Image 1 (spheres, rainbow, N blue to C red):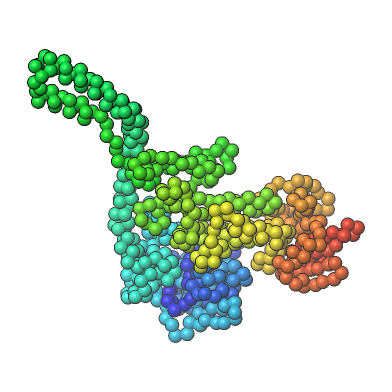
Image 2 (cartoon, helix red, strand yellow):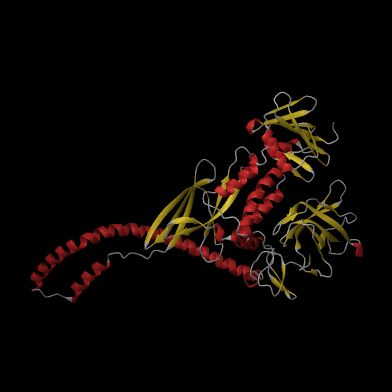
Length: 554
């Protein structure tokens, strides 16, 4: 791969696609923005190679193209290109290298490669799936490679090349000394895996000890009752014994008798040492299949074993985020918005610590930005990239922005989740008709013209009504008395309508979309590509409806 350490945008990954219709090769590229500004577009040179690594077409194996990010590539974010790029004339391409030559920012400033040089390197991928799974479970899903030193530079496990003088990675902030020690080769990772397995065995041993300790403590409670009575019983028996023995021996005692009395005293159990802190945890899910349940923590404090139960939470995930031998707990808060089906699985992760002194879980999300940077944000980013639903992408962008603000100290989570809920509700309420524009297409409640009707059903669920007149029609009855109509021929949607709604809802939707292309008396139209989005007043009721149809239609 080609790397320019002076370039503020770097290629993270790419994928090649072959058209079944004409065997043409297309590529999509994922770039990461290292700069503090949002990127609008890139100019890149793509080098094409065949399966043997030879240039396709000899020395003319490269071409220049432009990459546009309509919604912008924000700082410290990675994203695939909006559109796939045709490798015209390079049908035998099986591998590409990319050189960024120009960057356009949202403030219209430019970065140019100029005389800076690109270095050609090869990443050392972790091929062993078991080792890769272990490393990713400890460090995050962005890890795919061994760390190594390369010609006066060093490669991080995230795949970023850094100057050797840099003590931490420019992309992920991992420390150079740490990754070069722990993940330099297969042997180092195996050694760490073995240590981890030994820790697991030790944890199992401690759990067994804990169970044995609890049994011993139950026995100890019985012994305490005996001990409270023992002085009186022992005193009485001792007097009787002394008198009896004294009478039989003329009050002369043997060493053997004294030892026997000592042995009896030693039979009284002594309390065992109890580990301070968490001893064990367990989770019992409820029967209603909502993913929630009771989380029980068994812990030691001042020599005693105690238990607390936290109810009505999702199953916590135990992770040693800061690698100090103490686990933190990740608890996901599920945000449920019944009026918007796209938000049903939206979740926010909180990080909790167990405070032995307070004997409770304590919210500590702000103390662990690394969890959000290396685990939560990449997982959200992957979900956004995989989604074909613009409404879902729009909603997922809210917890993504909150996590990024947490990294910058501009968002502090609260235990009641009031702040994150407020942010989500604002996004939902500010766009009540769920109309978004993406890639020159308008989407209403996640569906658009040209979409297959089966795809629309996968987004909205089975229609409440369906029939056929001049064309096939599906109708969904939504909340707030909204009715969504989709007309289609064969399987392709050609017309969508949503209504009816009041003027304030119209105003909210238009504030999201911006100024209309055309405006008349109670009629407003937006054009994008071959689509026309038209708001208009309904005769009689005075309420409004929105339609999506061909821009050439009257």
